[in-house]
Amino acid sequence: MADLPLVPLTLEGSFLLHQFFRFDWKAWRSCADGERQKIAAEAVSALQHLECKSPTDANSGANPGPPVQTALFSQLGHKGDLILTHFRSSLEALNQVELDLAQTRLYDYLSLAYSYLSVVELGLYESSRQTYQAASAKGFEPYSPEWKAEIASTLARQSTAVAARLFPAVPEAKYLCFYPMDRKRGEKVNWYNLPLADRQSMLHEHGLIGRRYDDQVKQIISASIGFDD
Image 1: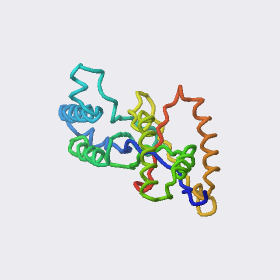
Image 2 (image 1 turned 45 degrees about the vertical axis):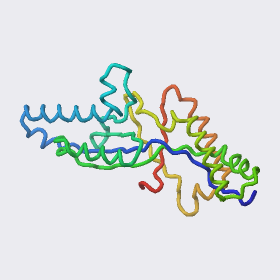
Image 3 (image 1 turned 30 degrees about the vertical axis):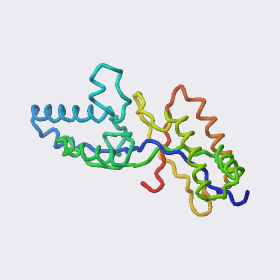
Image 4 (image 1 turned 180 degrees about the vertical axis):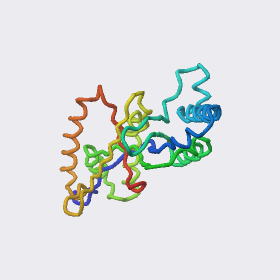
């Protein structure tokens, strides 16, 4: 048992990009009214295209349309004016979103104040040890090809079961709260140095609190290890 990994298994889903922009109001006011209307109309068209995973399907009338993939919010406070959040199935798709936005004339009035790149991640703290033990119980040596294949098969089944959580749509909500949290508190107080059982207990308690508000708040957790700060 001591040879089993101490790292929890994880499931990965949608890739997320949050973009925080400042808007150049002075330059915008100096632009002619007719030109502003053209720029705004072009931006609306581009955002509508990005909003849906498949715009043609959304307009066909055959179904209510695909999940919302991009959303625009007005930002409160002094750190920016607009927030764009994008959900995509790959990093390449997110890169294309950036390139598409950069081609709009509205982009000339935007300056990027901050961005955050991440992936939806579900840590299997409660089931990882059982999964490891089940693979070892079948006689597979830890980290052997057979052992890895057994783990991969289990993860595939679990990914299917929680696909709605791994690949969410942008919620149809009026407000967005962007909540960055760093689990690494420094060399002396480091979340990742805690025993796996302790981390599992803390997250379980944390989750119970969150479930009290699941009718009011749609929580989407993403991680940026290896992608962003």
